[in-house]
Length: 211
Image 1 (cartoon, rainbow, N blue to C red):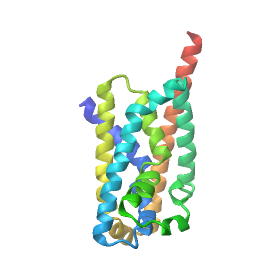
Image 2 (tube, one colour):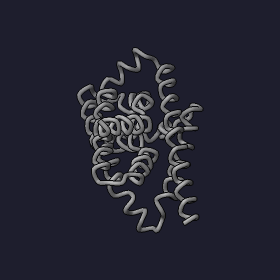
Image 3 (cartoon, helix red, strand yellow):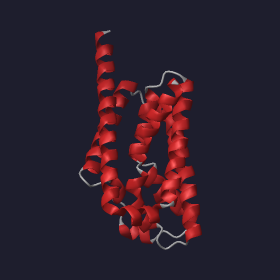
């Protein structure tokens, strides 16, 4: 029961920062010159790549942070601040996903290239998602918990794949205004997650000072 609760908790957190609904308008724009079959291949590969990117940062991100001599508490505060800034951008209608220059989009030709960049990263597994993955990992006390987070990432990208696969129809049916509302709601969830990370990091640093 605890494992299911944790999986659901992390799916919500990771889904909010991956934000496939918010990515729909941009992905439709990026893939507009590809055939239906090509779009499906690109979305499938991008979902796999994005999943592997976040799992990489989940298991190895903190290792590199420790090499630099940064404490877990400091990283939680820094990660929380980054997520807070990202959430503010999303809530006030300036998502970082939209900051890919149009001229770069028009230069994309190969399926493999577009699946990795920009669809897998930075659209799906961008800096915010990477930081979220690493920050969640920093608060886990066992390898089993890390595996639970990894399962949550896989499920999140599986859900994202089916959403993005139907992106053209979702955009047509729901409209950009509704997608924008959903995206901003995801921004509020990210903000709550950011505050949680910052408070946890500050508490840990305060505890370390006292001892």
